[in-house]
Image (cartoon, rainbow, N blue to C red):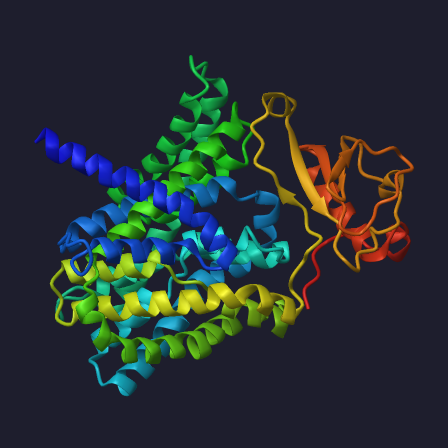
Length: 500
């Protein structure tokens, strides 16, 4: 027993370290790291090192646990000031958009592949959910307009809830489903109740953490993650959407003034990486390479229908009322990344023993690998081509400095991109709000503390300290100057994101 435990720890540690190192490789190649983790799982599996793993029920259970952690991290790191303006289109895209995607994929798959309606709609439901881990890890490394990135992140955090409900209903044996109006009412109830539970747990948890005098700073991150798990459990017991409850709780906690907030976000980020690594390796182990060959053609057919027809139509129906232009819609369509979530959802009918479930799992697995690679590599040039890239946007630096936390301040980084009208502007001409100041300039490999008359140049990197109260207004001012120069206010430029 001791020998087996030591061997398991050795293999687990080796896999973890390889996966951590693979993140750097995947960033250099422009590939989502999940593909490396899936490949590693396949290599460790029956066709590689010979680990025979076929427990779909255990995979589903552990996958749901991992998704809870991943979605919680997405909520904790989401800024309400960025999320609030896009909440409407994100909710519509996560509900009505899901319905459109399921219908289009289901109908075309039924006739193109000759499968039954239940299996065809199951394809649509499983693949209608974008993956939070893939979206978060990809978009947060890309300079994309904040409004578009916020829609995609919010969608990936919200759409798991209705999709899980649909997949569970479609995985039931034929003949025992309730009338459509009953199922629709159930979906509405679960979403509303899940959101309400998440709000209550988040507000109550934030109130308690602000007043608790815990003996160690390390207990606050544990408590925050524990609250998100509590929200999922309460939601599940109340037959509500636990995933939505997790996301809402995370958003509330992540935007509250809590002690040791930076440590909390850092802990959640590390825990989410661990969940992603474990989940993707496990899914790779579950896959049988000998069966994947027959799934290539159906995967390509379903994938093309999804990417070229279902996703664009769902985006068109969802965000057109909010006056998003065709360029924004094209990017939202192409950036609907799939990842572990569809594969995890495919284990639900597999564990239920539904006829054809193994085929669904194999097709979804191949589709995710192929199309995630294609979309992940092409997303940056597509964003640039569509004109939705924003190289001058400020980005967070993950700073663990205790003084900044006690001061309620954030450290921002800004690089002056080519073509930006920040080039040539003096530091004092930025007219940043009181509470924000440029503290350091990195230029030509060196760094110096700027004077008020220091002139900014293209490719300069600025470090800016801003209090939490003025952070958003400082970002808007920097965007305004980047677009219109030092006289931005004279041109009525307010720095808000512009939709085409």
